[in-house]
Length: 71
Ligand code: SF4
View 1 (cartoon, rainbow, N blue to C red):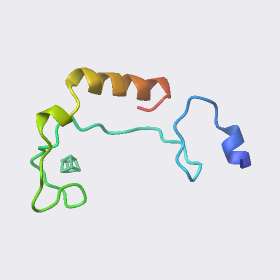
View 2: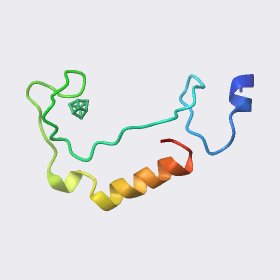
View 3: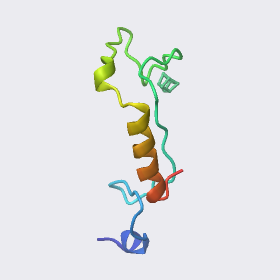
View 4: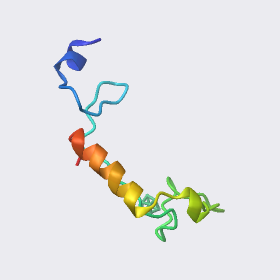
């Protein structure tokens, strides 16, 4: 473990390069109309609704990120 990793408090999200992840973005749908090329394939195969997180599950994930101090 590096000195930088030792200085990071517990309950923080850290990537494999030792960088603290301070914020995340959660998509509430996979059917976004913006179609950014780094996110959407030209022939996008959308997931069936049963495989997409419910709003309650998204809320639970968001609360988890809040607990590890991600905005
Ligand atoms: S297409 Fe763009 S705006 Fe839409 S979810 Fe992907 S990255 Fe975000």
